[in-house]
Image (cartoon, rainbow, N blue to C red; front, side, top):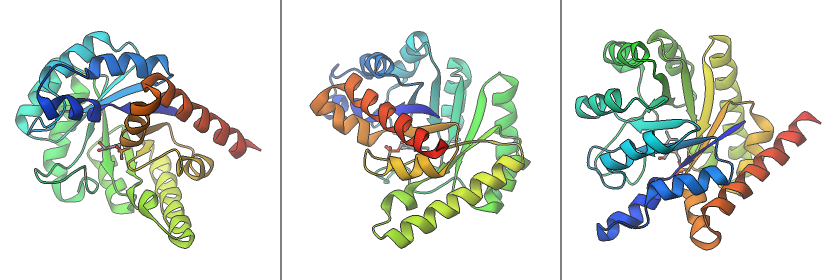
Length: 244
Ligand code: PXP
């Protein structure tokens, strides 16, 4: 299971003063030293954290894989097609949300998404759609010819009771099964922390796990390289448990 590290919140700290530090490009280098397999950034329309310059420099310096999270706003699509990250993850975006709130509604935007996915795949960019683990959304993702889906793990992460937590795991498992059967590659992410990553890794065989806030938070105290390597270690240990 690969680890994608979302470094948006390094840029959030920088933008708090609109200065030059801390630089997310430096954070990406330390995350990679810590074992990150993928670097993810979300270029939001309001540019509240990641800036255009960050994406350009990351494209030039990340030697693993750059995953650009983005809405389907025409301006952002044009930037992505120009910069050409290895992968784009299409997400819904609302101006007043604190973070991405729900999955993309692929079902109601099939026509637009079919065109958008084609523009990216024609340019050699892999397209992943961030969706809730619902059969209808998975079928629609296949229908618009995305190569991957990222299953939204927010409801699992937010569960406070074991009952709910296990129900959410079952939902993700059945989403994974349906998506896998239809030939989609399956990633997952949102709200994953050092505390809830274990059960998720033991229960789901996904390709990429995308984590941001929790790793950046820990990096404030232990540094980015160590924060990432501690998460990698957890993923590795829990993957072994799964195999036993
Ligand atoms: N995956 C997607 C599609 C996201 O939008 C985010 C948040 O930017 C993440 C993963 C990471 O979520 P978190 O910061 O809660 O780990």
